[in-house]
Length: 391
Image (cartoon, rainbow, N blue to C red; front, side, top):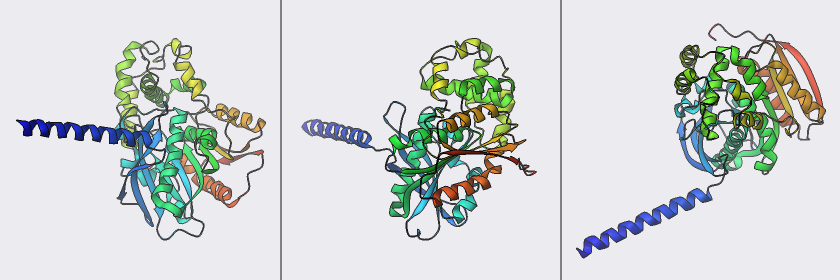
């Protein structure tokens, strides 16, 4: 009897110590700390790891996020390798929608072969909630930006002295918004890193107006459905008061589906066709926390503190071109360094790939120029490249 009592006491003490240890480790976790790294098959001439690392939640507490880090083969050059922090476009909001688990990952990072051949390390976050538990904060700019920046920290921890502190944030669509928010918070969130530039391809800026504009399209209603489910969880509110009641079951069904591959996108868009342009009630545009969240997650052109390349298609049905140009004009008026490229006739979904060559050229220039970019803005029009037959 005494032995069983003694054994039970020891067991309880061990459990208590384990709980204290785990709590202490979680409390002491720093943004960018690696939780795990697993070597996985990579693209040609490179090595790749799937990583889980720490980031910071909206509440300021540690949260884990997954992603991949891709490193060119061979020894790092003298001075180390610079980092490209890739921020992906919309893939869904469910945990299983993480790009790092997609076998077509290599096709989803624009210009990957070119980046590897130039010796860059690529850090590609999944964002919180994609690949790790918990709701994905979809189109929540600060959350996205923190996970992008912390992927750079994770790459530096994984590779040690082989990586410099210089990086460029490059993203498309949702990732373009993330990249703009990196430009807003990088100096205060990660002062030990050096942000050389921001590349934003078709970035949603004024979310309230943009969301209103795209409700006439099926892809627009799909993105609205993702937003409704994510924000109702993140901001702890109900969508019932701002969503047409018959649409709610369809909205929830859509939110469980991913849109990474063309096959997945076709399936979720088929479901989204059941939604109408009136799925959002008029109260959505005036009710808190919805209208406040839209404003809070709209990038501020006065706060992006890095050289900026923006590429926008003039026929984009998802991101309103005039809103992007208005953002650029406001940033330029505030003394920013912004290069705007308009792809004449360009749409949205192919834009990340079609703009890759000019984005990589701009990135090369930013890493080569060790002096801060002088204020000034340029605008040029280029013909939109045609997508290949398989697109």
